[in-house]
Length: 101
Image (cartoon, rainbow, N blue to C red):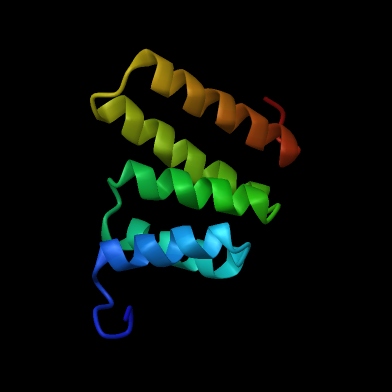
């Protein structure tokens, strides 16, 4: 289905969510990365991508995505609570990546 509509972010999201649920993390990461490529301002996709990278213990890459997510959250109308949660995630990932917090 994705091959027929490679630019359909909804299909990529479904594949990503199903793959994550089935613990097929490489496929999930690939799907969420494609959404982020197609729609860089999609906070939900970037958050899902960040979490999957973390689950795959790819903390350096997860830090990059979480940093971009926080920048998006600051640009878009998000609540202080949402930004605080992203900051906490970013600090956790930095610690896991050995970058301090």
